Image 1: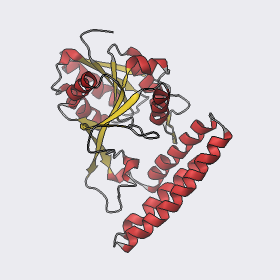
Image 2 (image 1 turned 60 degrees about the vertical axis):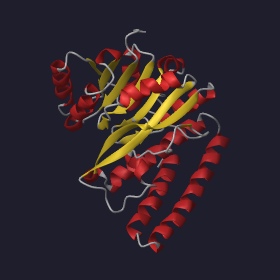
Image 3 (image 1 turned 135 degrees about the vertical axis):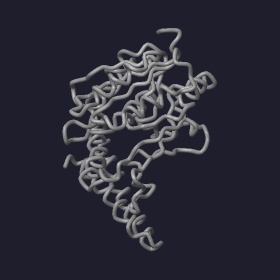
Length: 305
C-alpha cells in the first residue's frame, strides 16, 4: 500500500456523461489533501460520450490522482471489482457516477476509521436530488428504490440483517480482497435485466468474518434522480432485481433459506397493503399503490419472473 494514500474512491459508470463530471468535481474539491486519495473511474461499456467526458476532466486536473479504466464485462460488480483491483490505499470507498459528495466527505471517512479502530466497514447517508422535483406518489418506503438511505440520526453499528448501500459505502481493502470483492453472480444491471443485492452479499460476508459495520449520518452524498426515468418499467426492473438477487443469494445457502425468504416477502407484501390503506385514509391515495407494487415486483423477481 502507498503510505501517502489513505483512501481510494471507485466509481463504476455507465452512460452518465451528463452527471459524471459533477461527481468528479465534488471529489476534486474535497478538503482532504489531494495527495491522500485517489479516484478510480471504471467505464462499464457506456455508449454515450462518458469516455470523452472522463478523460477530458482527468486530463485537465493533473494535480489529482484520478485514473480511468474500462471493464467490458457488463455489470456493476465486474466494474467495481476491476477498480478495486487497482487501488493502493487501505480504504475502499464506492460512490455512484450520478452522486455528489459533500466537501468534507473523504476527510470525515478517514477520520472515522482513525477514531473507530474496530470498524470493518462504513455506510453513510444518501439524499435523493430529484430533478425537477419529488413526485407526489413518492414515499419513504418506495424511495429506497431511488437510493434514499437514512439509517440513523447518530453513529451506530448496523443491526444484524442491515447494511450500507453500494453508492455510499467504505470497506477495508484487505478485507475486500479476502472475500474476493463483489459476487459476480449478483452483477447488477446486465442489458435489460437487473440482479441486485451485491452490496448486501458483501457486507453479510464481512459480518460473518466478525467485522463491525458502522453507519455515520455525517458521511453524506446527494444522488441524482431523474423523475422522467421513474416509469413503471424502470421501477419494476429495480424492485424485481432486488428479488432476483435474493433468489440467487439464498439458494446458494439452501432451499430452506429460499422458503424462509419467500415467507418474509409475502409478509412484507401484506404489510404494504396495510400501509397503502393507511396512506389512503390519511388523504394520500397517490402514495398507496406504489408501496404495494414495490412488494409485488420484488416477489416476482424472487420467483424469477
